[in-house]
Length: 288
Image 1 (tube, rainbow, N blue to C red):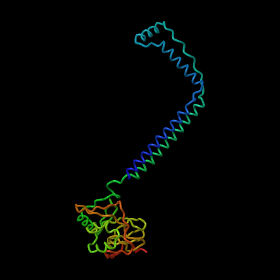
Image 2 (image 1 turned 60 degrees about the vertical axis):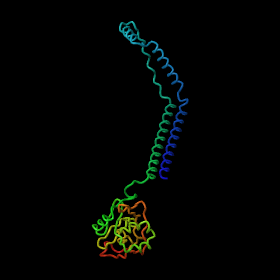
Image 3 (image 1 turned 45 degrees about the vertical axis):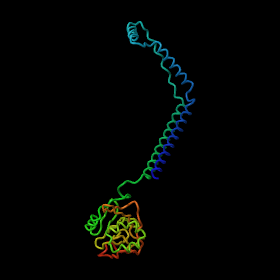
Image 4 (image 1 turned 90 degrees about the vertical axis):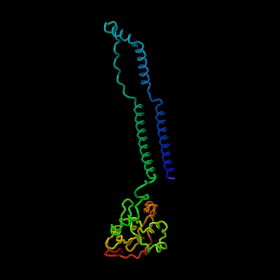
């Protein structure tokens, strides 16, 4: 569907461009009728007659040229007297006006082409399918054992910058409660069953990036104090829900594939499938 839209926009832009150029060209052509003054036509006709008479006396072959040069050097050939200088005639105002109109018409046409090209390029960029890597695409985070090792090395948290997401462990004992509590369980169940969850880094309150807190083992937003447990369920602050998350898949190689092109709204306030409380001092004061 996106490809059809792109092709349609391109064709529409080309038709508009061709139509505009044809219209402007027709106006220039129609405006050119009757532009030459009688004096200009007379001058041009005299120039043509002079050129015709010169052609009749001008040598046309190599032998003629040699004979012409010899006669000229010997004085037998008398050159015609140079014509008197032509008096200056100011430009025809009508011709100047036409030149101005042509300049303005072409300037307007060029401006229109540049604007249309910019609009077409922006439309194509907006409708063009997203790339195969980076945020907004499906990202292969890695093998599950390697991910869990990275979580452990990060003190309970693993950040994936390519997907703007946090990956943390999800305990097996909480699966049954998640299945009955999460309305989006089917979209993330492959990852939960493998023991991990992928959370978007953005706070659902006002969009700040939420960092981890190593002492409390929670996510704690420094902007307005919203707090979430290790699996992104809200524990305090002004956020309207838990941290948003992404659909997860496990491929045949036991690798976690996260679709960052789909954002799932976090669980509602009061959800607590893991029962985790703060495991130490909070990094940010409790939200109101």
